[in-house]
Each structure stands twice: as C-alpha cells, then as structure tokens.
Length: 302
Image 1 (cartoon, helix red, strand yellow):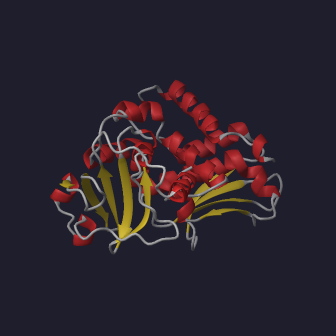
Image 2: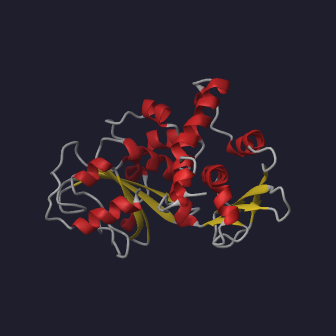
Image 3: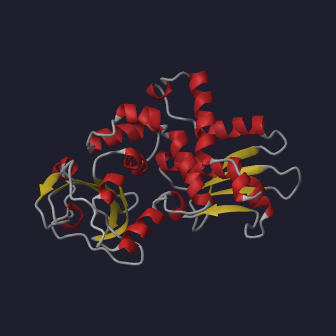
C-alpha cells in the first residue's frame, strides 16, 4: 500500500469519535474515558471480520513499549501487546498507538520485509511523540481518539494558561498520562509554553507550542545536551507544593525574558516534567536566529 493510498490518521480518528459520540453521547467523557482495549477488539471485528485484533495483552517486550503482531496462519489474526509495568495512562496511549497501526498500516506491516512479524515500537515512537512516518501517524491517531480536540478545547480554552491542577484533571478525564495531556494542550494552545522532560539536571526532550516557537522560544535537545539552569526546580530537587504552583523567574534564568516555571516529578519513571509559560506577548522571531534549529524543531514535532 502506497503512502498516498493509506487511510489518514486524523480522518480515521474523527470517524470513530463521531461514532462513539452518537452511541455514547457527546458528554461521554463526563462519565468515562475511551475504553481503547474493548474498542480495538470490537471495532476490528466490524471493519475486518476475517483479520481482527484477536487479543490485547500485556507482555514483557524488552526495548519496546508496545507492538502489533500477526499470526503465521492465514487469514491473519492480529494482536496488540503492551509492555509490562506501564501506568494505566501510558498503557491507554500505547494500545491506541498500536490500534492505529492496525487500522492504518497492517497491510504495509504484513507485506514490507522491513517488518518481521509485526511492528515493534520503542519509547521514542510512543511516549515522546517524536517519531516519523507511520509512528507519527499512529501518535496523531492515538491523541485524536483519546483526547478529541473539540472536547479538550472546551475544558481548557486556547487562550487560557494552564496549571498542573487543570492538566491533571484533563489527564484523568481522558485516561491518559499527564505527559500525553500536556502534549495535546501544546498542540493547540495560543499561549507561549514549553514542556521539558528531564533527569539529573539535563533535558531528555522538549516540546514547544507554536506561539512560543514563533517568538523564538524553544529548547533544542536533538544532537545536543541542554543543561537546566541552577535555579530550576528539577535541578534543586524541589518538588514541594511551591514547585507544583510555580514561580516567576526573572529574565536571564531560562531565557532573555521572564518566564513562569512549574515542575512535577514522576518517581515511577524517574523523570521531571517542567512547564514554562511566558507572558502573552513576546518578541517576534528574528530571521538571523539559527534557521536550522527551528527547522529541526518543526520536523521533530510534526
């Protein structure tokens, strides 16, 4: 199947979202998140009764977060696997990601010699939403299915600055991790914001809102090492209520303008999540800034 002939991820997610809204009601997220495991099993039986998702199971998959595999016998039976010891929120996104591979890419996965019995997805492809090609398509589908923008934007309007209380409430509403909820918010917010995921004082990766990027505010982590400033909560190992609420740093700490920083730590994954938010108006992007950095950032974030 050529790239041009494959189903489009957002269109497929919208189709299923409309179906769920009709069946369960437009207020369905007021009651329960998407049960993506049941959805994958039931929906696949309707769209491909000869080749459905036969099971969704937990497995120990070294080096991978999730996988979509198929049987040797024909007609093919498919299975979604998620790596053991994932939080409920991460598991939900992983299963949705693999369900996307089933809906969008199963013919490619079955026919292309680059795949050996299935698609195996590591943390870069799923948790960081930093993949490319079919991995990026699967991430877009998963986010749109689990956190439909029409509902998300009603809960947190595009012009409103966020805090961990609001973002945590949205993570619970959609049954996803806090990281996934923040990434979804950054996709549409009109505020200038950056998320930084770090450990031991160094950034693993970062995601920037369009508004921040257009004003020249971003953190480059690809092929470089970014060290957090000494005043950062994550560096000071301060994960108190003050870190959750946040503090306004003066110009020169993170960037050449003041920025509000808040931070939360995940002991389970041994990582810190820092969210930076600037004032509503900022400097216009200067052409003389490194164009390659901006290009890399656009490519990294789709």
